[in-house]
Length: 323
Image (tube, rainbow, N blue to C red; front, side, top):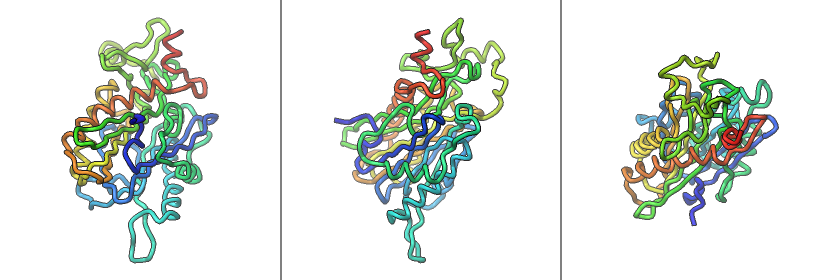
């Protein structure tokens, strides 16, 4: 039975490194060799590495591994450890020099509001996440890159809810599997299928205030609102045989899932990015994969906040609602 994890896609491995005391972590996704990747960036504050190799006009290079990490731009250093591990395993693009060059795109969330100026994921931590990677069902909630994630930033830290890492998967009519892993550190609220807020900006007198409506009628109170300190990262995987253009179409269609589950989304204050890769194991339709990608993306976002646990005194949505 599918486990609603990214590892439901055959051959995909996921590993976390988590420092709950510091409130940060990183997550590594290792697809089967030969997997084709793409990316679609919509947020105005993205911080990433090697994403140009996934651009539509770049060559059809395979993606060796993907790193999602906390630590803001500092956390990109963890990719060095991922590359070291991949090289040791012989994973990457073979070169005439007799070595391999791993292709390791990476993207970060800003979790420094939780960690302060302390721990940030580095090369050894990225390496540790690789060592932990397996095809078994992976952890969700306050783990890996979701450890220090928060949502609902409209009213500042006093109204945050705990974000996290979530996942979901589905199977198409032809047997193709499409799965999503989301790291949810959004400025906006997370909403359910009916449009109700399930995690977001909190006011002790009103409860969840619904940021998308509040910004239309009142100036936000967050004193550092203009700084891009938020991000939702998504990785969509499928065992379908897709080219780079088709993988890019799936990534673009998966953005609709973020819009269904995060409101507001893709703001100038968010670094929202969707990665997609296809392992090429079976023939399938890019169109159908994209439709399902949007559905599992929304489910993964909701799973992230539902599975989250308290980290460094940041309450979960369930704890907020039970006050």
